[in-house]
Length: 563
Image (cartoon, rainbow, N blue to C red; front, side):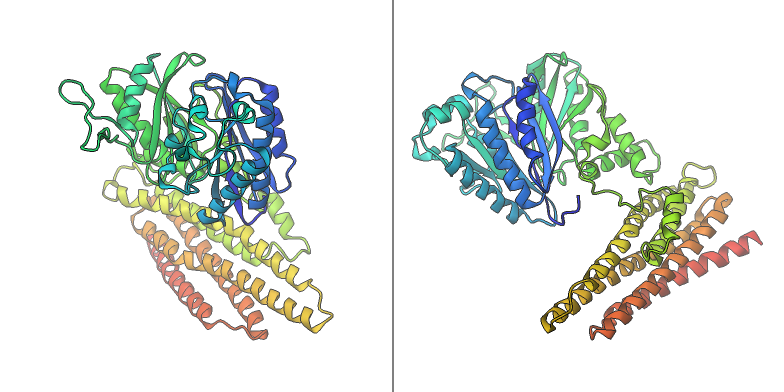
């Protein structure tokens, strides 16, 4: 998906059993231009389906409204039951910034959609999380208190007046319920499986781990209240986590169902390990986990690194290996198949690996050898540097766990991880360089018949050329540290891999020189148009000098050792 601005929307509809209804609701999304349906995840016992789609802000806004409209047409809440709390036919409709979009922009999208739902569909709308207009409504649990069954009594009261739509329990509302529209960070719906059917045990664990915790009790077992009569809470152990315990007959086991509302605070593997510890205290065991909907790639990568480090192994592994380690360690396949290409949002949205990097070696070099000017030297320079990073990670990993290298284990493990990060950055730059060149060509194709057109075209060429300059500059500025790591590996790494470290030193230097030449070429083009940038030249000179220093040091050390 090529859209520069990407928003995710995750409506939850109150139907998880009737396939025909679920498919009809999901179908409206695919009719909206600029939107991609990523995942449809129904649950029979919860009688709820989590739908995930992504696209431009405008496209997502339209698709979300259509989902609410279709769900209200097909789902009758007066006959609904399920294990999950719910408010309406479309229970929640959150918008999440993914790329090039701020939270404030998502709030505006949420409010526009909410207004339209209330006005055109006559459905009560409550804004929650970041979109909330009242502090007490930020918390979805407060907004949804009493669930659908409480709406008849709440509507009509000033306290529960919706942000948009009718403040009365009309026949329309009796059928469709209310919809909660919000803007939030990426939420991971993550369930941990237990080797028990006991809902009570599961809920007891949930109370201990969720941030809201549980009601404090005195020595007689009575709930403790403060001077204002409010229940005093004992906070849970996990921040930014909501959770309940339930029993799922379909799986013949109980689960702790959690919403990880900010995985920069609590990662899935941290939640899993804490639940496992709490379960152990109660004589039960966490046997695996379940992911409902999608997950950011970085959350699985972090889990993979965590479990490899805990085992004393190198976490400087390729992404696919880290993700497989995470899947196995979290037991994500316990209840069924788990395919990362279907469950990781970046993979579903096409945000990982561009066209060139997906090619085989043969396809790439064949493409390179045609009369097309791109891919060209800039992409090859980035690829050369990526090869250096890959070799650096290899030499470091071949040193991990080897006899005679005990004193440098922490160092080589850190180098392996850093080299893997360099490798992924540089591989992405292979496509970025060609994409930047294509934008320059597009600018040159703009019309130039009138003076105004010439002015517009010239400015567009300058902007595109500056962008094409920054890609190789970013590559170049990444390489002094990479070259330094390679030079260090020559001294402390596995001696049997010295020649590999030597090739890494040569390819990092090749990548740096190639990126430098591309920077100079583009700077010359800018100068011709009166837009010179001496600061970029200074940065490029410094980065090349730093890379040359470390690469020369590595080369001399290897030659001396092999001589």
